[in-house]
Image (cartoon, rainbow, N blue to C red; front, side, top):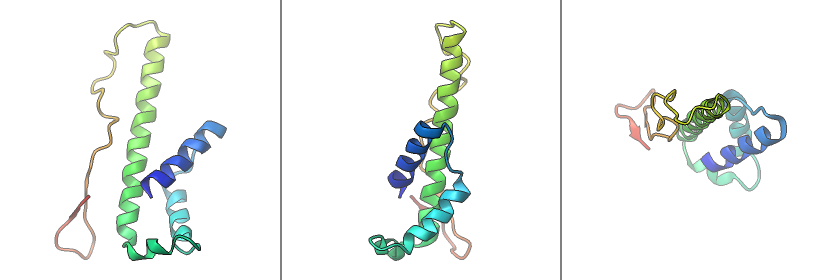
Length: 108
């Protein structure tokens, strides 16, 4: 699901310079689970799929904001990217996902 929705966001951004929000893609995920050919998604708890989608959105948003900072640095003619306090923040991080009814979180 991560790659499916990431590809969708990339295509939308290339075409319109905007892309769907997390909530819009979350709704699409629910509909996708009911679509023919994607029945296997019903075997996976929805919370796990939503967590993967949330992680993708965080990584995507961080990469876009870093790209904007880099472009603005280049436009100003600075040779270093000293404006970036943490240049590795765009790397997606694996996060803990916990569920409301579970006693322990699920590490993805």
